[in-house]
Image 1 (cartoon, helix red, strand yellow):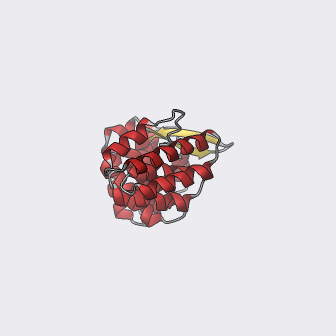
Image 2: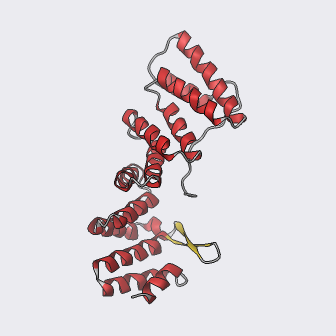
Image 3: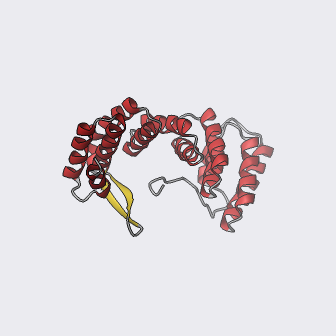
Length: 234
């Protein structure tokens, strides 16, 4: 997930502008609650400084319990779970955030990747589709297409792939694929989408359409190893 950039704010100041901004926009709080929030925020920051993620998560849970409409705490909690490879917790925390703020890009990203990691492909697909609709991100659309292909939703996959190919950004953005000797080969998103299109056609038994798609991918990226292997295997 080297493209996936989780937002984990590590603050060293006593008072955090990000926290302050969220507190101001959330429901009004009493002075006592505000003081507790500020104390928990300072402990959270210290816990991050000392790499004590268990304490950091606990403080975020307390802040979230005290401020249930403040989605920022949930985003940070989901991020901590994800960075600790606790994908079930990350998915649940992110989905809870989306109940409060369904336009949270951070929560959609964490939910999508976490659900994919635990094998909940249908639910991951839903989050990637939502992420693409919200951000118009080509990579989120590619992830949607790949999951649709994996789930044998071939017509949906082809529709997503055609959208990628027609998007001018797909010629500029790069995607990495593992090759031999632990190397990674970067190719354009457009070439990757055409390679995926060929794989869909292979599963459908349309060898000539698959051949054409592989050749189109190689016309864009002549050294694209996966497309070469796919074409050779027809």
